[in-house]
Image (cartoon, rainbow, N blue to C red; front, top):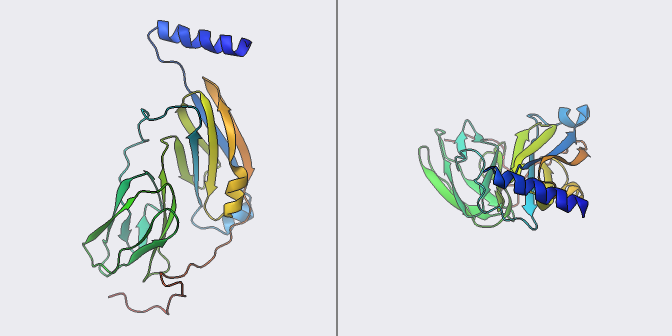
Length: 232
C-alpha cells in the first residue's frame, strides 16, 4: 500500500509540474564465455524485447530510423539482423553482378523469391510475429534473420554483454532474450514476466551462454547444396 501511495504521489507531482512521469530502463546481462565467442565469428547477434501485459505501448515510436531492406552484396545480407514491426514490407535488392534466390521456410514468413538478376529487387511483407531465417538457394554462405515484433520495446546488438531498453513505461511485461546460435529451448527458459517500476533501472536478469553450435542449413528443397559452381 505504501509503495502504491508513493508511486501515485510521484506521478501526480510530475503532472503538476507539467512534465511526463519518469520512465524506466530495462537491462539484461549476457555472460559469454570465451569458448562460446571463439566458435562464432563474427560475434553473435543478440536481441531483447518486452511484450506488454498490462501497458498500452501503441503511442511509442519504433526505435531509430529503420530501413526495411536486406541488401545482397558480396554474397552477404546486410544487415544480418533486421527487426521490423509486424506487417512491414521488406525489400531484397540484388547488388551483386549475378543471380540470387532468396527464401525462408520458417514460421515467421515462408517465401521463395525465385531467381532474380543484378539490379532488381523483390519484396516480402512480414505479416506474422516471429523469426524468419533467410537464405539464398544458390549461395550457402548467405544468411540473415528478420524478426517481426508487435512491440517497439526492443534492443539489439552483435556480441553484446549488456542490452538496455530505455523509456519503458511502468507495468508488467514478458521478457524475451534471443542470442544467435543458442538453442531455441534456451531462449524459452530465459523468458519470464517482469514488473517495471515507474523510474530507475530494472534488471531483467543475467544469463550465461553455452557454446555456439553451427549447423549447416539445407537449401529450399531440404537438400544439401551442390558443389560450388559459377554464379553467373
